[in-house]
Picture 1 (tube, rainbow, N blue to C red):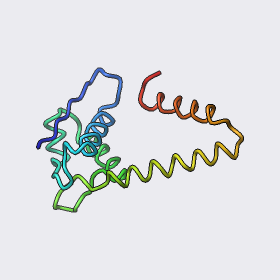
Picture 2 (picture 1 turned 30 degrees about the vertical axis):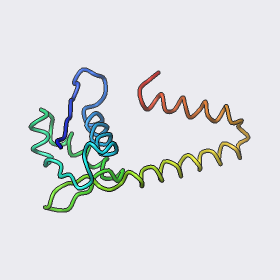
Picture 3 (picture 1 turned 135 degrees about the vertical axis):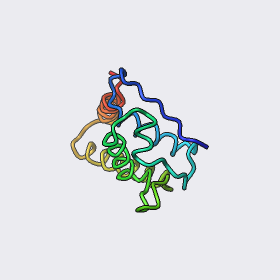
Picture 4 (picture 1 turned 180 degrees about the horizontal axis):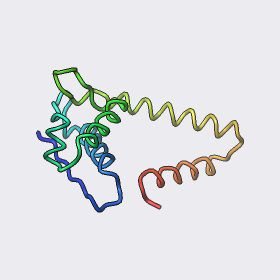
Length: 125
């Protein structure tokens, strides 16, 4: 199994976000198994033609999201976080649903707001 990343410099999406999204998707889909050792920041930056800070930013966000973990000088690895991410998203959804209900929003109005927010985040206007 190997990390497969493609960066579209003209795509309108920041390179670090493209990198973050692709690693996250590959980790969550199982294409990159738990424990898979990721390249160093410098090695990945060089292979993709990116600045090391760009890769480092993506790695920081992925680590904060629980997708990867850094083991000091041992390297950076895919973490066992698929279930944790699902639980966190479910908790956020429940919190939103509770708040929308307290605000008196109808189910369809609350759902519409979520759909609008998701389209904005995922770039589908």
